[in-house]
Length: 230
Image (cartoon, rainbow, N blue to C red):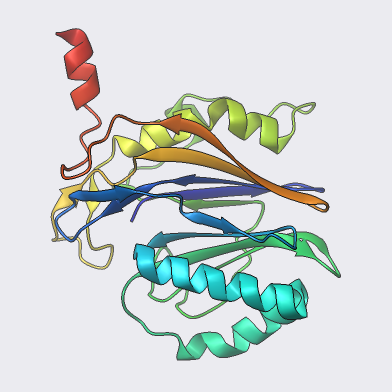
């Protein structure tokens, strides 16, 4: 899977998403935005895993929230998740402004991954790190970025260091199938990097970065560096 990272503050939720859509061999099929936003509510739904499944599911969640509200949609979704298909792989992040609790984010997956029970709506805490790794211990220090300053908003911090974070994970080759460590390892973060910010009165998505990945080829994060060195 590729990448979704989110952080919640007292008045907003910020989400970073990449744009790599690849096949079962890790070949890049397209570069697409992996976050959908509501035209009527402060609500965004980001996803990783199967692109078509994620896009359809995101649209369904947004349509339901626009019809009955954010809180009711989460309650209905929690009841319906056990009926969700277990394939293809999918992780969904829902970020919006709850009518009763303000900024809120919830995550669900349709398979057991990263300690999350499948088909369960989970509060990921102040930050959600939906990024593949190779088992190493990872910290802000190992990524090479500082923690947010006391006078710095999460949005400002992610705007400044989001590319650095995704560049770090872009260099890590991860199993194509997160359920099978024996599958081939590929670089799956790429295409583009979007920052979406959800506030009580607005939702917006900004393109932060675009990588020189080519459709029809596997993502090679070292190719550009090698050309510069040459």
